Length: 190
Image 1: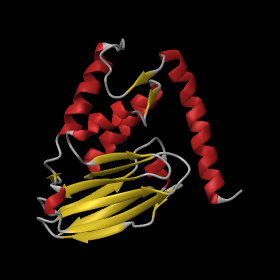
Image 2 (image 1 turned 45 degrees about the vertical axis):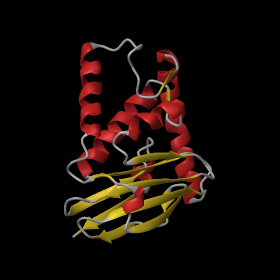
Image 3 (image 1 turned 180 degrees about the vertical axis):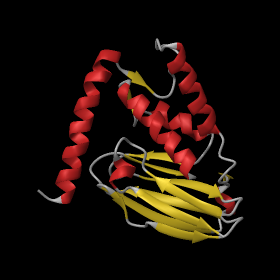
């Protein structure tokens, strides 16, 4: 079995394991969990994660595409990006053009390590509840922050981001198991 086949099999097994939980919970779409019955602890955890994901101040802000100083093209496949590290300058406004050349949907999210960890936790929670990670509602939930796109096979979408602070940041696909399998890159801002 090739590495690609092994990774895809591992993801399929994970998806099957999660699907039983999702089936029990019923089908749901997007981040809107208002109609769902969650325990007080689960509801509180969801609200805390949403607040963390709305705050991008540690690593920048949504950029204006008309003010982009550079376009960086990145392609994703199973399970990797063709670019894994970038060096930029504080103040740069970059348009990231992400093309999904793979056979399954992927996400492109810019953030620091803490942000990416919260995004992975949220994605796991949503997957376990049976939510469709490719739904328009899910992508709309990320539109305000402006640091995430969800891209189906064959699609290209862009994110424009202004790096307001120096630091070490990441771009990742936070679909369950993807960043852990290698869909992760670094952005060093000087």
